[in-house]
Image (cartoon, rainbow, N blue to C red; front, side, top):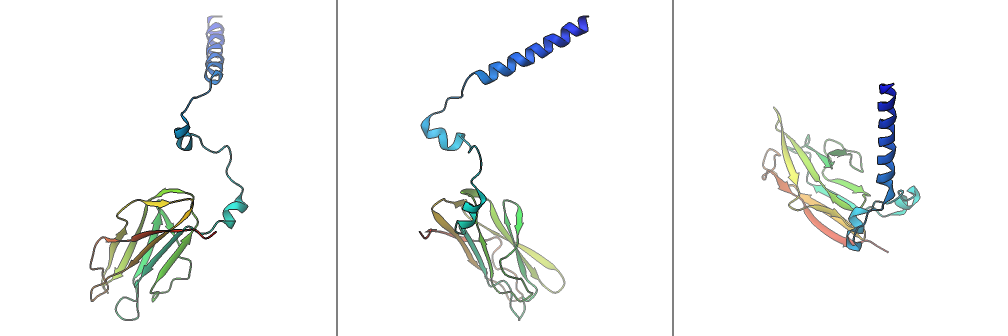
Amino acid sequence: MLRKIKQSFSIFVLIFLFFVGCAGYQKIKTEDAFTQIAPAAPLPQYLYQKQEKNLILRIENVADQANSYKNYVELYVNDYLIEPDEEVTNIKRNYTYRLRLQPGIYKIFAKYYASTGWEVKSYKILTKEKVMILPDKKTLLTIRLKKNSWGGLTENPAFFKIEYEALKK
């Protein structure tokens, strides 16, 4: 009998807490609405497909037919490995990535791999500032790799140049 009373009391407390929690609305200031209120549902997929690609990333001078024909690059956006737009071969000189991302701040970096013949050395390509994807602009990240005589980078880490352009209307 005591067990049944405890169980009924527990259920009553849970129901009471549920109704108390749902009774009021949260209050926020108008300037906090953008950061505090999430959309009720995402936009339809067809709207995203019409949107222009808003992150263009270009890495130049990756490989050549002389002494860096095995060198390659990997790009990461928020720790996701991104494949380049075009097919990569072992003499692919320039890598281009065109992405459509939601507005926000992203962690973007690349890894450059240089083959010395006996080993593969890894170099970092970073950004000096936060990469922002803005709703009305295109973000451009570019770098031309500066290499030494055997194909390794002269700077480690190397840094992307960041520019912002207005989207075409």
